[in-house]
Image 1 (cartoon, one colour):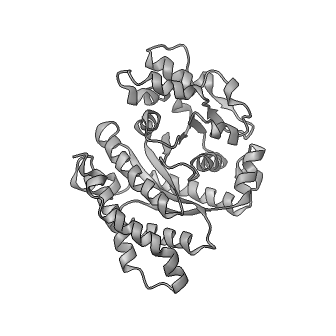
Image 2 (image 1 turned 90 degrees about the vertical axis):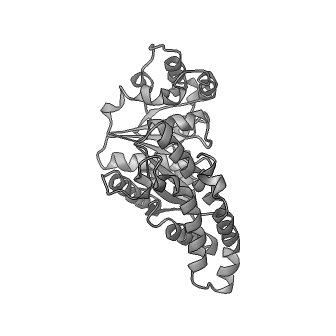
Length: 328
């Protein structure tokens, strides 16, 4: 069994879409999958066809509060619902916001979700957690409970800042809470291959992170089918099985399974506190800048589109103090 957190503190990068369709692709391959909605907005539940998450009880928020107060009335199995899209879901609703506030004064508050899930998830091959767009207590709980992290990155240069911050957070969680946490990879989402900007971001990201963080070959392109399937309350694999989006999520599922297999000691699997682990995010920043410096000269239109990326690369290269130095 593997617990996967899909996380990025930047909103609107496709986390919920990725969780729903990655879960559907894993289920299609015959794996037992539990999806966890770790966002008070309950977008995952709605995406999977649960029309009114507010009426559900118990939910993840209820269970977290009970566990934080050392109560054992509810269990994960009591809260799991079988969605219209035929996927198992541990739902959330607005009460999850209250749960985050209630846990602030709890001893061991960062580990509540891990302890909550542990007795129940042996029934599943994969547990995939949809994290809210923040780095608050709920997101830290998800990272503390996870074996690996998938980071959706929109093909936009501002989204790259979120990636750098996410990697810094992962290192902090590994050092303090969950030494076994690994970065499974980043996945490019909302790709509009018609634009030079998106193509430039994708190329720069892949070149900058070579040897540091895997960038999955699967790219999730912007497609109307991904919006329409939400309205239908189904995954894109069920709604339009032969679409480009469905095929991309099948490929992503295969790559995630591959990434979970044991592998030799690349940078992101270094021991917490080691020189390699501490240097991960500064190296990523310098890698982005280096990739931009070494890139071949682009045609005028491409060069104009890449100008903001060059500025962003220079910005990242100068942020060593911001990216990890303060943590030391």
